[in-house]
Image (cartoon, rainbow, N blue to C red; front, side):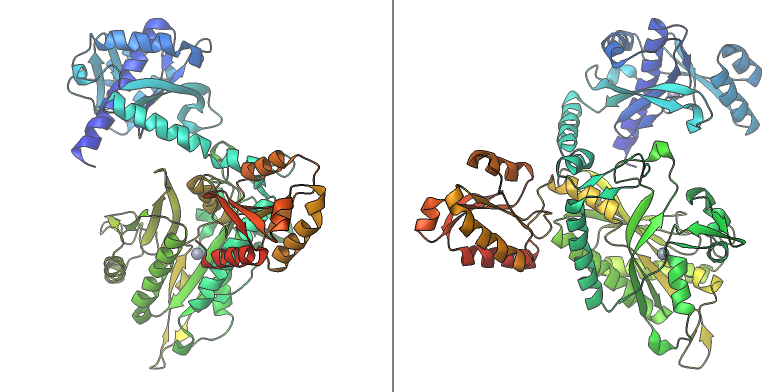
Length: 583
Ligand SMILES: [Zn+2]
Ligand SMILES: [Zn+2]
């Protein structure tokens, strides 16, 4: 973290103290808990005697600003556990925290600014007078369980935004406004892309025909690309017996994220949370020689994860997901080449989707963690990490390295992407796996006749349909490019007399696989055109008397406006070309 970021985080946390102090002045019976900095400001969780609402924010903010004038630095004092218990005798939350700090053998410290003292580990600005009074504001209220546990009391969380200056605060708010307009949950509903239904269950999206059309296009792209890269397609069931996941190690380590088992025929069956174990079984189904490698098994596999209901979020956090998955089994010698091809595929996709800003993060092992957190083979770790690093450098991909963040069985590569309005998304995680193939006893016979275990690369460049389409809706603001738009063309006859010609054009479009729709309603012409605009349809073909007299149609583009009169054949050719170019 740069010095700047640190300073900002310290200011944000200091403002959490200021918020708590203001609340205590106005509502003295409130019990305070914790108040950390977050990446756009700060929050404080509090237990109010009677509920407050966002209508109370101006009063609290006013108090914060008047207290700010009286605050200077933060005085630090180390106290004994007894002193701390006495000081916070009326606050069970703080008492719980004190006992925890005490048990860990850590120092108990109090920080005071103005007349307000709080239990805190530190990390404040040196002088509160350097904090501009207009660089922060309270933003919203949310419920939050004490310590994030559902069995605990629900507290009131007050969020605040805080930036270096009022200007930065305003810029952030404008960006947020734009993001709100593009919110995939809002646009997904307006454009009839997906729905959730209580009877189906939370976090289990239903894809409507428009969503289905987008999915078809993404899968076609993935299948064409993977075919060209010499992948083989497989299909696996949505559930498997307990033993498979014991072998893979998902049980018991990953059990919390899996749906509870179904018991029948004397066995336990689990919904699959990952496709890998199934693919490993396919690899192992027949003996392999070095000539069979690399073997690349691909599947748009559906996985189920038991995300907590409080953590579900639109399409971004769901319980069923269709993953652009594949596992590449290769020898050590083949690894660098295979990994490079995976990167190339990412870059190819980024270009298609106009993703200009991205970053990869290489998560590595730590020496201390070998044999505990990480497979005990330092040589292999270093070698693999170096191979990955070289590939990233060679591909000229921006990346950072993170020590001690790898997976148990090999380095991870996380991919972050930014939408056109600068929102960051985690796209996917790739993993290099040198342990699990061994757990499954996967082998190949090498040139010298010895049996060896292959390496496995897990990769999912297009993430899951859920997460990726959620991203795309926001990235495009619903204005999908022609090839991906759920509805590509509306054919609009102006009057009854234009109907026959309109039907003819419509039918030629459908025959070419173009997702066209004809508006046969009795609505006026203006209303029909507006309907196309509302659905963000890329093209509208208008057929009126004047067009028919000229033997032409009028083409309107969502992005470029009226393109004038053209021959129907010409329009169809233009659209077909644009679709196949995927621009
Ligand atoms: Zn503090
Ligand atoms: Zn996998």
